[in-house]
Amino acid sequence: MRDGRQSLGKRGELLAVRALQEAGLRIMERNWRCRAGELDIIAEECGPDLSRGAPDSRWLVVVEVRTRRGHSYGSALQSFTPRKQEKLRELASMYVQETNWPGPWRIDAVAVQMDRTGKLISVEHIRHAVTG
Image 1 (cartoon, rainbow, N blue to C red):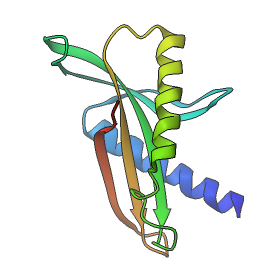
Image 2: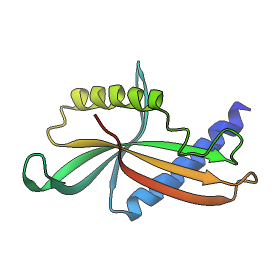
Image 3: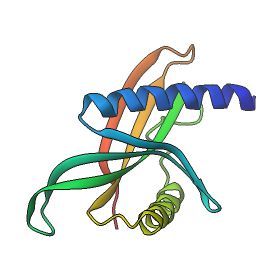
């Protein structure tokens, strides 16, 4: 069972990486680990930082990938729970501190939904999926 879930997760991450790259993000790191947990994808994107009034800044983008086959346990997007979001805030803050990231950062999500047989239905990139 675990191998099937790992395989599904890896496939979802590959699809997410492709979608992020097509959207113009540069992948910096994958599967960053620390004692508290793991971040799926660390990327970078250029864009405005309205909070600082900077027209073009390098954004650090922490990306959580959620992959689901079928809807027995809810959709990929539904699996992005408040508890998971809180954990991502903690891990992202740790990454920013550890790497001394100087600019703006955010947490995005990529929801990969497949049918029961594993056929891809959708890949949805949600910018600023976690706030606060």
